Structures are given as C-alpha cells and as structure tokens.
Length: 270
Image 1 (cartoon, helix red, strand yellow):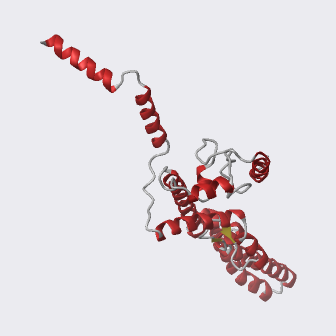
Image 2 (image 1 turned 180 degrees about the vertical axis):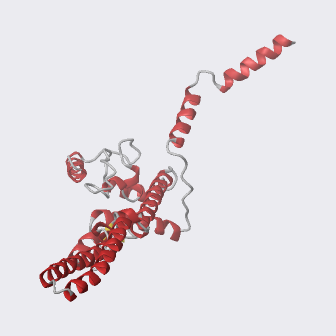
Image 3 (image 1 turned 30 degrees about the horizontal axis):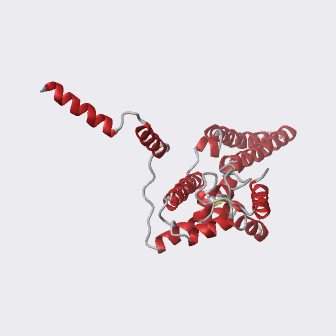
C-alpha cells in the first residue's frame, strides 16, 4: 500500500470512527504535527526515504497547533533537526554533481591512444614527403605508369593522414555530453541546458524538486521566526543517550538505595 493510499484510508477510518486518537499517541507522526512528514515528500523518487507507518491526520495537526503543548514537547526540535540533515545531504549531493561536470577528465579517457595516433601521423607525413622526389624522378625517366601509381598511393596516404589528424583532435563523445550537463541547485539533479521547456517544467514540478523546496521553506520560516537548528550529532547518538537514561531510570539501584548503602557503610566504619 502506498503512503497516499494509507493516508486516505486513515482519514476515512477517522471519519467513520470519530478518530479517538490524541496527538501524543506514539503511533502518530510528530513531524506531520509540526509541518509535514519528510517521508511523504519523495515517494517513488531516487531519494525515496521509505514509507512512514505512523498516522498522518490533519485534524490532529490542527489540534496540536492550537494547543498549549505546541513547542513544549520537543516535536519541533526533532523535526527541524531532521530536515536540516536532509538539507546538508542535498548540499553534499550538489557539490559532488558540480565536481562531476566541471572536473577535467583524464587525458586517456577524453582522447584514448592520442600519443600513438600522433606518432603514426608523423611517420605517415615523412613517408609522403619521401615519395614526392621519387615521383618526380619516375616522371623524368618516362616511367609514367609507375609514377602515376605512386602518385595515387600518395594521395590515399594524404587522405589517411587527414583522417588521423581529425581523430587526434577529437574528444570522446561521452565527455562532450557530460560537459553540457548542468546541476539543479534546488534538488541536485543533472540537467541539460537549453532543454525543451516541457522537460524543464516537468522537472520543476516533480516530487524531488518540490520536496526540497518545501524543506528549504521550512528552514527559512524557522530563521525568519528567530529560531535556529543545532548542529546534528552523530547518527544514533541521541538514541544511545535515551537508552542510557532509560536504563538508569529502570535500575533497581535507585538514588535512595545508594544513599542507604552509603549511610550503612559509614556506620560500619565507625
């Protein structure tokens, strides 16, 4: 089931059952409550984040936005931290794409065997130069047929030399096409400049392009409100931190127990 179909089903079930859910329920998508769920932005694209199995209910979002809990439960911090990481990933993608289309390719890839071709051209040119006085001598000796045969051979060699010079100056077609590519600074996709307007319009209206526009809009709105996004920590750091805190809270060796042990130890030392 696609994300769109799942959301429609959830909305339909909510209407039929009166939606007894609360926005604090664990199976409710908190990103959707704040603004939008990033997983739903890039469905069936090259940057698909995978499905989000949580509930996306617009009524719960309206309820949360109007409540006193807004901004107090940490939902915004998690949401903006996530979209900031997506923005960082996009910036790296754009830099890699720019490096790809602007970097100078290796000479052996751009023009394979160029030195070998140049050497063959030099040898062929020398042979042609050597044939000219030979043809003149044959003509002076009245060896017309032999002179004409050698002249015809020399003309063919000149044609081969011209073709060889063209191959020396030629560039691998793959790299010609690569140099014509551009990079979309919004979503990092490779584009062909001066492409048909319909294709460019289709790209600009596509999910990937529009998804990154929405992410940047969310970050811009946060900055306009005077907010900021803290630097992202290493992946998994927050989850490990929560795990440690959880284990501490569940530990049977509570603060009161530790205090009692310390007190008993003090009495024994006395």
